[in-house]
Image (tube, rainbow, N blue to C red; front, side):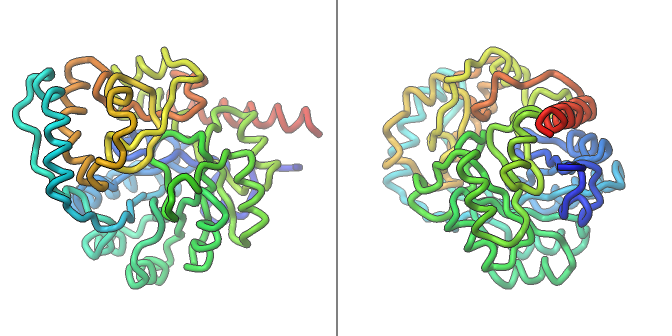
Length: 358
């Protein structure tokens, strides 16, 4: 591997390094995206849970802060169906937590965030970010065609070979092979979700062999050793999320940072209990006490709406008991470094590993 920093993706997007900061809706920030892009990687903005106008403002901020490529990430979940009985039952289940945190009534079960739609598309076509990525599959055909026709590079996540082949068939430009180790929401869209529980080391080469588009490895990659391994397995680039959470530019609250620093290697869990979709985070009281109740959870993003005030109040109270402490299985390897310094260290570590192997 003569020059690992040169790949199809780095050439296409003008990156110095094939390292992407994961979007991490709610945990990333404009400052983090700008810092990574200015340092030669690709920063990402997780805009899935905000309005189209907020996304427009964020795009303008990031574009003003860097000449480098950046990625705007949207969720493309199925439209949720409100099941009144499930909603009422879960509101009753949440009520004691709301009372403990000094909150009022649990909010009504409603859809508070929408999948990628015409309003989001209008912002994308106006702002023309270099990259648009999707999580939970692909948008409607006509929306995706409009993004492609605008010349915007597109990425989506796959958690097994079947999903990767479907993304390629739909015309995606690059595929994130998201291993089971990854923190935050699983990109799974081909049910059952358990079909996407494949580790990164096994997943990456299988997807590389199954598709002709570039593959981006993600899940449990925390340092140069992980980056080198992913590249040797055939990945064109890597995406890191948990590794960037302890950077000062990230948006995670102090209690989340403390949880990252104190976590054990065996402490992360997959849970549906915060949003209604499987996501990996550091185990806390809420995850333990809701375990096994998945069949009664409202759909995503309705459940996310119901737990939102609880999660916010928990952070403000300085307790991680009721927060979504998203993190991957490599959580003990996080480092408290500015994003640019972390990127520089990742590059140096990868250089050292690959030189040793040659």
